[in-house]
Amino acid sequence: MSQIDSLVTAARRTKRRKPPEPAVSAAARPTVYGPYADGGKWRLIVTDGDERKASKTDTYKRAVELRDSMLEEINRRTSRTFREAVTEYRDSLTSRGVLTIEHIIGQLRRFLPMDEVLSSIDRARAEAMYAAEALRKSCSASARLPMCWRAVRSAPT
Image 1 (spheres, helix red, strand yellow):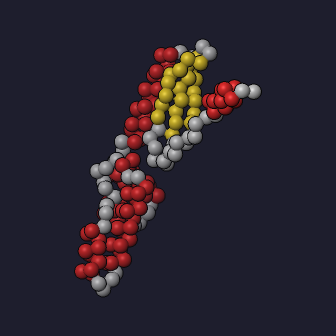
Image 2 (cartoon, rainbow, N blue to C red):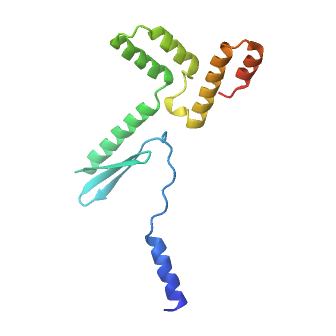
């Protein structure tokens, strides 16, 4: 076997291999792909993080309608603010008869950016917010308040 044949064979082997999957964060936005023709039917592919689901419909028109409704649902879910989520949580607590609702909701309102969308906080920002809140709570019980408040004010949010 010549050197050219071995290079061609090696190139064919690498062509057959799938490229490595990119790292996907847990907060990745769901996506809808398609419709694609698939043996007389139409296929849509929905991805959410590392999960993938395909669905088929009989007509192109129905596939487009389904895609549009999926995209509307994704937009509705990903554009919800913390205020809306906290209000929904409050309603849930009320329906279960929890007695400390005002205390719980007050803590959430102080901690969360109420006018931002839920998907706006990534892991790094959540960790920074948690660290700042933990520092604030530990300093509030401390006798060294002036030193602690400088640290809390300079903490990233």
